[in-house]
Image (tube, rainbow, N blue to C red; front, side):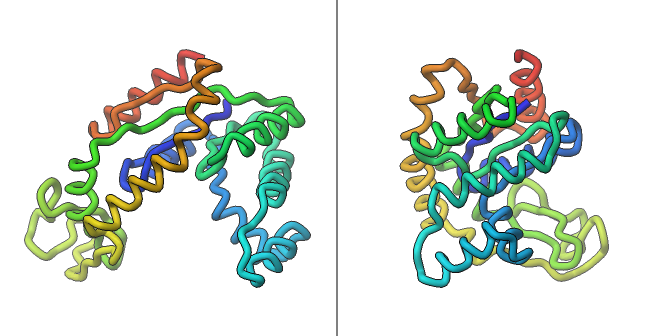
Length: 216
């Protein structure tokens, strides 16, 4: 099964992708991660991308397509793919169709985690993590059982992401809407877009996604 998982930063997309990887053995294909890995490994595509980035230019659709093509070829037929951060334009969506067809695959679902902007601001600006083990907490929804002590590892050091502030969250939302608007109608015409309440609990979101996948 091959799916696109959509959602702005803070919607829980990463959490759900990790659960899909864990429960179904799927592979999360993040174009950013693939690009960094290819550059580090100095593959032919990676070297081409590195030269482009060193010139201060944006990596072309052709390079991204080549990365995805290579990744799908290496994955094998029995592994499903979760596309993260791609496609973002109709041209990229059409290119993805061609790549999938080349590997005898098709896109089964486009799942959007729908969020309320005000609630998302509250969710993101209140979150912090243990500096040692990475356990997540929130000012209002999940404080450590003992004040200032991590429940998981006992550390007393915590950290917050510097970009977890209201203005940044609202800017991310604007960027997300601008980037996803072009591709949603393309997939809606094919009847494969499903929307899930991204503000629900993690378990509830997971259950909703599992129902979508079971409907294939």
